Amino acid sequence: MMQLWSLPPGGAAVIEAVREPGAMGRRLAELGFIPGERVSCLLRRNGIAAYAVRGAAVAIRRGMAARIDTEAAH
Image (cartoon, rainbow, N blue to C red; front, side):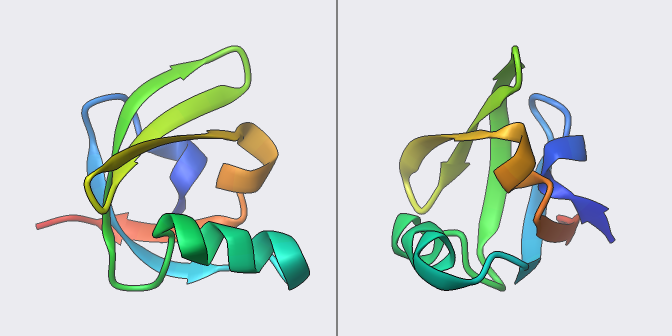
């Protein structure tokens, strides 16, 4: 298992768990960051990364991405 933040640009993974409680956890779920969903890293720079998830590009900060656990996509 690895943190989403560790995913290099161009890499893909499957979300295993989102360890963010409360309103921010719900917001991440609304954006598509849910267990079982495939995600790929588009860009990472200056503490912010952009990910492709459910057909959309979503940018989140490093701290948030570090609370999303993933497994390598097959």
